[in-house]
Amino acid sequence: MNPSSPGALLDGVRIVDLTTFLSGPFGTQMLADAGADVIKVEPLQGDSSRSIPPHFVGEDSAYYLANNRSKRSIAIDAKDPEGLSAIRKLIETADIVIENFRPGVCQRLGLDPEEIRRERPELVWASISGFGQTGPWKDKPAYDMIVQALSGVMSLTGERDEDRPAVRLGIPVGDLVAGMFAAFGSLASYIRRLRTGKGAHIDVSMLDGQLVMTSYQAVYAMLSGVTPGRQGAGHDSIPTYRSFRAGDRREFVITANTDRMWEGLCRVLGREDLITDSRFLSAAERLRNKLELWEILEAEFTTSDAATWVDRLEAERVPCGLIKTVTEALEDGRIAGREMVVQLDDPQGRSVKVVGNPVRLMESGGYEPQGYSYPPQLGEHSEALLREVGIDEQSITSLRERGVIGVPSATEGRCG
Image 1 (cartoon, rainbow, N blue to C red):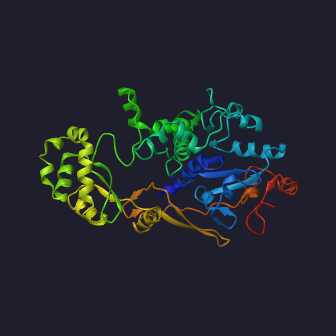
Image 2: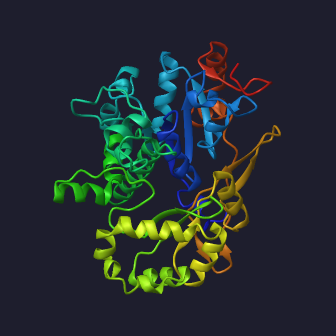
Image 3: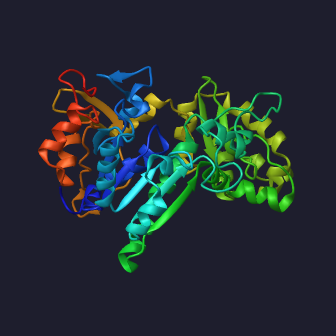
């Protein structure tokens, strides 16, 4: 791999990945994309995300394939003493361990991070959980929608009509953000380790991550004492920052944030009279009279189709865009030349298209290729990884025959 490509940034860094489902695998995939050797430690039945319907390639779900590229997999029974010993040997070779068990589970498994870090104080250990390793909620189960609800995020999401039910964001932001913060915290701690030799135990709470995402809305609430409501497709501060429906029923968004953009919007509509209208002379006046303004704009936008409005607005340098479906956005990503839609192939003939990593390194000749690899079969690297940590062939054979480790079967990749 080219040493200047994003996939070589963490070359030589080994990460033991004890995570499952989404928050952890998403974060460790980011690190694998950057070149870390990510060892995915799975139970014999595999990460539960491998079996999530409805879409599969072979026996692995699209859900799993979306979050586990460029890793190596070992399938092992952590409840067996020899299996646990092998996992600990892997951890002895790691720079970073990331797990997303409930608080206390690692200790019950015999993988107490504090005990392990006493033996290896340079180790970075990141724990992802719903509500953190401490506090009265630490033992509560958490899923993405639960933390979206408890964080206030769902109260901000949906139509402004308060009679309508709250809705979750269409993406699992609670999981994804927790994974990103775990990756960030792990790398920040690893950088400190390079300077000082000292590792860390990082505590990442999904709920905390969602509270951070409330950003200025949280500050607004604390300063004003007013609880923000549902945002719909608009903005609490800028009335010309919202979606509109055109004459062809297609929706598009405008983000006319400045006076220049506002005036450009008025020219596009042929409504220069609005520029000098006393109700809309300033941003504050436009916000104060937003309902009247919206009524005018909504009526004007029905006179032409969405694509035409976007072309006209762009010509006046008013930021705007069509609201696209996922399929349309992926097609844009495919043709944009930034490798955001990539195809992964494996030696067994499996193939899947996934969304790439947005981090790019600029070089004089353009972008360096990312160098992804197909997500591993369950237990694909079990024997090779045990050899790497010094376990002899006789012991590996015994572990396989006793069912302590799993290797892919000759059929579809389930351990046998």
